[in-house]
Image (cartoon, rainbow, N blue to C red; front, side, top):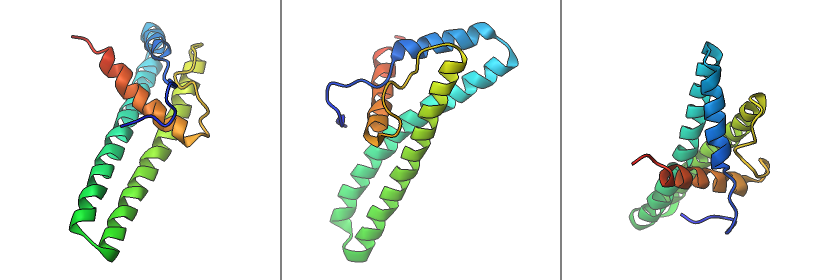
Length: 136
């Protein structure tokens, strides 16, 4: 996958770690719910990247296997799925930034949440940064 805006980074990994630490330090049942919501959102960002990648592959294969209306139907199905995943990513970007604000932390998403391509790049940044910082 390639970024839409080369040289930009819309995921503040350090803010993510600081938010997790702050929520864990709170330690009550609300904090557990907040951690679960954050985990779900982070999963949705990774899922978005996976779905877009898989959809692109499916379209390439469909172009070889189908023609006419069948092909157009496959492309429309892929586009609708990608759109739905993207809308979920946008909603979750807004949610994690509100969560960060509630805990007095910097936003995780540093772009403009009305710019769809910035949100897409953010999702890719999440995958890359989490992978780069995995525990070995």
